[in-house]
Image (cartoon, rainbow, N blue to C red; front, side):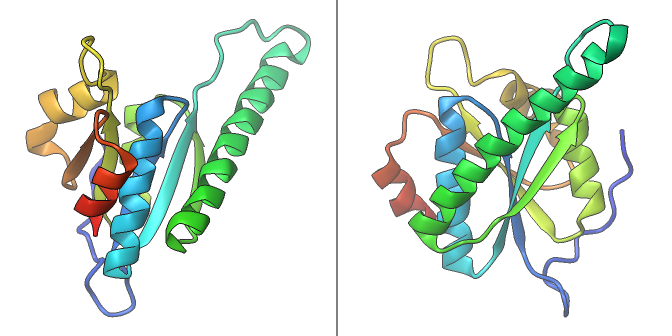
Length: 167
């Protein structure tokens, strides 16, 4: 596990940040909505983190490089679309970060890199299969040692309900 620096979001010259994981799941939209509404209410910032997981390919004739570039381009496109929605919905201009690798590791690396991140916002799936692997992993096994509080937005909440909760 990465050693996490002390949070500095309330010190002079720093600003509170909510980090939200951006992916292709429907619950991601709810997490982003909560994060940007809450940030707008508190005068905070939002970091949108998208993780491009490297494809498992053969490195034959640069195919792996091309597939990685395509995955990063798709990830960036999704990130830009959600950032535009954040600007329109709450007037928040988020910081956009793309990392490559495994999601949980990328989250920890970003928290380590930015001492102003004070909250991680995740969306939980509403289905009967559980909240999703990342929420299960972070909220279950590593919750006691996670470096920042984790806000889990239930997938069954409507946009209006999230707005009412976020402020």
